[in-house]
Length: 145
Image 1 (tube, rainbow, N blue to C red):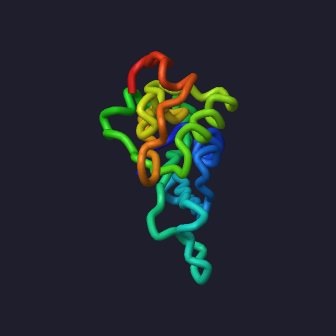
Image 2: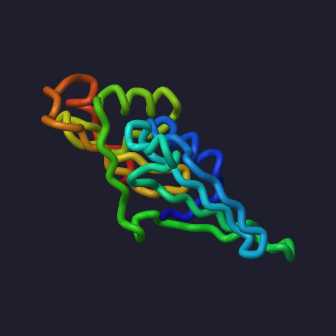
């Protein structure tokens, strides 16, 4: 589970990684929304749920009008790891959508990006590493991950 401040932006981010929303639940009494996402090939057709899911928790702004909760750092939760079919294609799709590639996949195996709430996401090439390729092989790190 990761806490988010902008559910729509975060769902769009994970959609770029290929995850799909499988369930959304609003709790009026608890004042929060839970959103579950899974990889399409991992979704059970009988239940519509993923075998493994990312859970997003959005805590609604306080009713008294005070400022909503904020989350900083992101790394204090560690990071998520997500295996992709082609790390170069995935990183390009993210970059085209304006996402910073903090640690490019220079080795054809691993990259790091951050969600809109600054949570680190490690992207791992499924199977064997791809051969090093430009522009990734010479791309410098950006920021922290």
